[in-house]
Image (tube, rainbow, N blue to C red; front, side, top):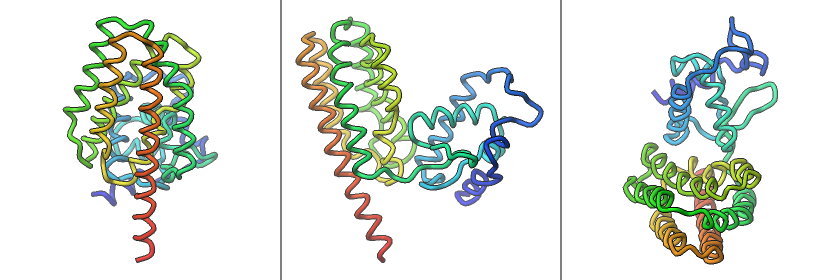
Length: 258
């Protein structure tokens, strides 16, 4: 089944002009309901997380459409969303492919960018905190704790969805559209490498504790304290991510040499 899935998704690679337009449809085709796009997005995420789609694999719009049994339009929109997170990349005249695992330099660069914007977003959000928003933050942390901390695709996706929700609530609450665009541009890049190493979430205990510390700081309502704690949190995430990447790279090298 895994080989069939990969073959279906890799088949019929075409040029951009071939894959970007559905036969019999023009560029003014009616928008697809967001629920269908969401379903295709989640299915593609599952295929990435469970290893059906691996680093370097091509992902054609046509092949994915046939494999999932949907039209090309929701597939195209879902792949565009995945591209914004770095989970797939667009190759000129080739369509999409799954990128290679990021190296230590790329991870460090992403985390350094987060260090520049997320503490500032947190301090700004603190100025606009209210009980309803604080409850939403608490619910996101609770969901992180409820998520199974295992290596299967559903568990990883559930955990990271809650983690993303926690940080997005803060970014949106800051009320700064320019910073939010920068935050969105980073997307899921910081988590991408974990999709390819097959070990699941390794730092949940630390991350959840740090999120709870942030939540309590938001409740106290002192912006500079929130800034400091968010900066410490992202710094810790950076150290853990680089450590995981180094272990994964060492394991991969050992497999190649045997």
